[in-house]
Image (cartoon, rainbow, N blue to C red):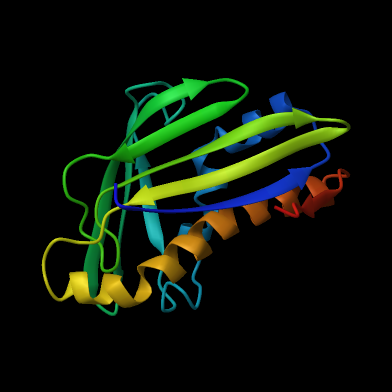
Length: 170
């Protein structure tokens, strides 16, 4: 993968608790399941196999439409080491506007009185025009939004659940 973005936050909750929450991809992908400005008012629907993205080899994906154009990506969990690490990547070529194949994941590191959550994406630009041109302009912003939403939504969840979450300083 030729490009990468990551977002890190500090969450005042145990690594096991944070992992259990994020291991449910419905929580992790909630930013794609709700209408937003970055999704141009649209949303994606997720589909899971029997493993529900909680086992290595488990397959899942999303599909939907933005401005009437179908988008989709099929993914597989490639690494899962509770309570510290989970990684998944696209299968084949995703049908997306601004990014091509990608590998995503999260890493949770224990710290005094909490955890440090790092959400990352490594990606290629789409191969064909005009998606490639859109990717040159918008891929970085989209990747930052995606990792940022995953990390900050998790921090917000634990903050409202009674744990304090503060963005990291680097």
